[in-house]
Image 1 (cartoon, rainbow, N blue to C red):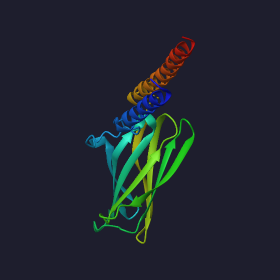
Image 2: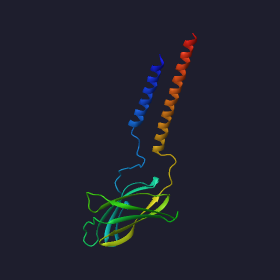
Image 3: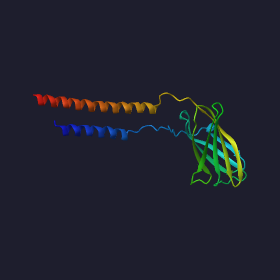
Image 4: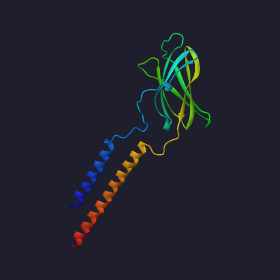
Length: 191
């Protein structure tokens, strides 16, 4: 076996491992579950002249991630408010931490605004919503969420360790095969 055949075999192995890594479906880091929204994850509030339905669309509270939808209507007429500014304020009193975010318009629905936030620490978070539009402005407390302590090992970290282990085995095999071929080559030259 000559040196070009060894290089071709090693390059083929590298491409095979890379293809496996790219084609392997890894679980999403944000752990989006697609589970139905529970009753305690929906809040109907009145923020000044606005009626706002707050829906927790998706969350991974263990990672401090929340995705919320806001349906903003005129509280007196029920008509959609399509030109509102929706500001989200998350407060963790125990940690003395505040987070701010804004919800942005979702084009197909004139009353829907979506917002995402990362909550920076564990504990109880109070989510306040402030809405301003040509109708006026107002705010209210919408939800209270409990962010648990992070688990040390999750499915994502186990997959990461498995992929890392597979890569290390591939690298070890490459070194071993090159060393074996060099030893075989030197034995042929001596004999």
